[in-house]
Each structure stands twice: as C-alpha cells, then as structure tokens.
Length: 279
Image (cartoon, rainbow, N blue to C red; front, top):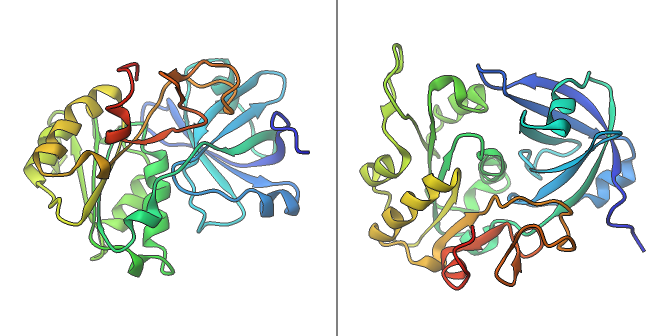
C-alpha cells in the first residue's frame, strides 16, 4: 500500500524569474526515477504538494501539461518559509513531490464544444496547463473555438510571456490580454477582467467557461458569464482555499461538507451554489 504522505524524489532542473517584480519564479522539476514518472499520471487542474526537505511542503497547481512528459512545472510566489526556500534553491537540488492531487477540469465533457478560459494574475498556472493540453496536435481537433482572457495589474506581472506571444500568433486560439490601468508602451486592452469579458462577449452557445483567479475577480466575473448565457453547470471554477495535507485529512480547506483538496479544487458554479459561501 502506498503511503500518501511519502513524496517522490525530484530534481530541480530550472529556477527561472517569471515576473518583473521577482516575486514569482517558475520551477521545472524532473523525476529521479523513471517508474515514478510513469505512475504520476495527471490532468490539467490538479495540484501537487512540493516538499522542501528541512523546511516543509506546500500545495501548488501543476502548470505543465500531460502532453509535456518528463517534467513538472510550478510557478510559485514567494510568501513564506517554504516558498522562500524554493526561490533560493539552486538548480540541481533534490526535493519531493506528492501527487497528483485533487480533481481536474472536465475536458472530456468539453470535447466538441467551445471553451472560454478566464484567468487573472498568479492563478494562471493550471490554465496554462489546460491551454497547452488543448493546443497539442493530438488534442486540438477534439475541441471547438478556444478563447482566453488573461489579466494582470501591469505587463510585467504576466506569466509565461514568451509562450503567450507565440499563442497570439496562432489562428486556432483567440488570446486576449488586459491590464488594470494604462502604462506607457502597452498597446493591448486596459480594464478589469469582468468588464473585458463583457466587452469580448464570447458566445455561450455550446460553450463552457473555466475561471481561475483572485476571489474578487471570480466574484465579479461569474455574474458576467451568467449574463452572457452560460448556465451554472457549464461554468467551471478552481478554488484557492488554504490547503495543507492535500488528501482531506486535516480539515483545513473544507467548504460545508466538501474538502477543496479532495473533492475539488475544481467545482462547477452549480455545485458551489449548493455550498456555504465560505470560498
């Protein structure tokens, strides 16, 4: 019987500064053992506990896609002891990973339909995984129109800038970026995500929406999507409640009778409407 608290050994291959304020870094990890890589089967939307030996562990959304074998990618903001240790960690260091954990975006249900992805700021990691998965040549034909609306406070805070620039050149994805306020040199959209979503007005016909971002962004974006005609059953959210154990044992992340780490983090709006407003 596998011990769910025992992390898999992984090696830090790349430690990269992601944002201009240097508060977010992206980490590329590779499996030490081939058999661990074969067992670690995940889907976009899931997360993992990253263990820094001697410091502790913390949960992070998996930013890489299952279509990118051999590695796991996490983008992490420096906010505490574990994340600070990660930021200071030299490439080549060994660390541990527990997972994959939680459920994932219902991509099998979304096949054959259009998809609108709405994301903001730091909470873009699992959305990046979803986009990379859909755009993979083996998967793209199974999905309809793909529209992405991604916002940040300023251009320097966007994640994966080079990749976004490449995606914006493609004709099989509409990728819209927006910043909160005008800054010199920015030629893209300016405005908060809920307002830009209403301006873009993606069709809700035969469409799903996936939303992930700061709570205030989600709070004001969900009514816009409902106004555009998306039913609650086809609005998919990823919650960010504070998780600890990742397997529903510690009770830290429960909403009503649901554990975000075990029953989520992905919930439809229809599911959330049946839960207490504790998220």
